[in-house]
Length: 392
Image 1 (cartoon, rainbow, N blue to C red):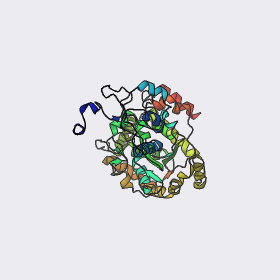
Image 2: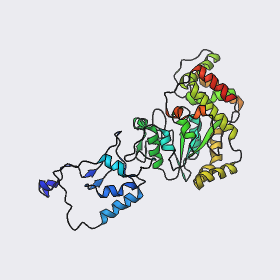
Image 3: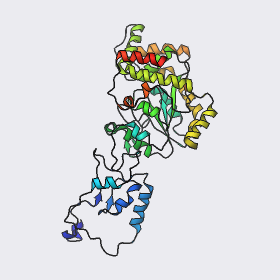
Image 4: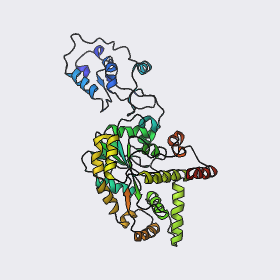
């Protein structure tokens, strides 16, 4: 259409929109730090301005409303503009690590890069899927909270029941998310102004799970049996991994029990299960008993943004304890369902642990190598020695 208004010599032979991709093929994200850079670029439009770049957006609006320059800009349209990528990297301050932002060189997939510099608080409901969904549904309409689902679900980005799109992100973004899970998690946080509440189930992200729960930014509410016994721990892991498991019907109850144990051992690696059990046991011992003291400690760390969450604790605990046995086991194989239903005679109750601070674990479970890589495997002899060391 532009050819109808002026001669071809007056038209740029290139795109008028400035956009660029970083070394990993991601489009750059423009932040407040980049105002001066944009001012000097020979482009008419800028693409991918972060929603958090309030100053940059205000500057662009002010520029658009301003008067035209006294003399037209002189640009040699016959010269292809080459974006001075490396020079800009050297000149710009370090971009905020909260987002996969402009020119930020870092190793992909490292949770520490995001969490150690994250300025936002977030809450995590941690436990078997049915129970954490019940707890999150109980607070989904509470003002001051943005309640999402299992955003790190292995097969999809779960933003909650029947939520397909969340502020520009999509439930079928799983391949995009899995390219760099920490960066995608940061993109979610960057779109939320109040307190995010996220569901996390054991095994959703073995490499990042413990990093999230040990983060100083996290308010972790583990869903735990009221009485920590061997049989309740078996129930905990069965509910965690049993949904959607395809198994042949067992002929006897003991075969069904063995099938549950075999599935847990197959789906949940021994070192990961040991680490998670150690976390939950330590959390159970250090959890606050007074809701008032818990709220005070969280306000000290996170400010008044925690009030809607702490005030909704009774509603969440009521929700997880009113779920029927039939609903809790609905997704399990038929013979598992029959076996687990017998535990209803125990009148098992669940509770949300009130943690004031991140749980302190032995170095065995919190080493940076283990948190950042799936490649580490603990052999049987090493695992045995580790277990002895933890118990001493």
